[in-house]
Length: 87
Image 1 (cartoon, one colour):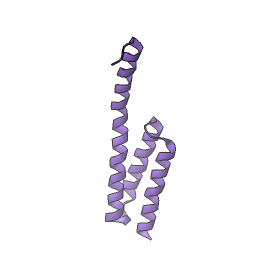
Image 2: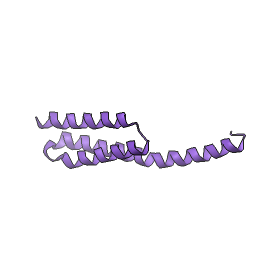
Image 3: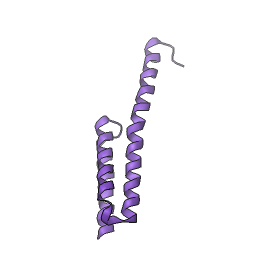
Image 4: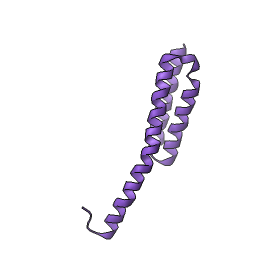
């Protein structure tokens, strides 16, 4: 348990950030999952879901929820999977 006023305030701020960041993180995870399923189900029409996943990952990286290199790596893997599926 926090003892000082500053530690109590830091805990409040941290809880707010956790709630706010969860929105972007879960949104990115959901979009990536949908894109993967679309790539495996029908690669020819998976471009739209891939675009949404890239947007979600970029948004999460911009907000600082995930690292920009992490987002870049995930986007690269999705595009590679799409290219492999269409080839």
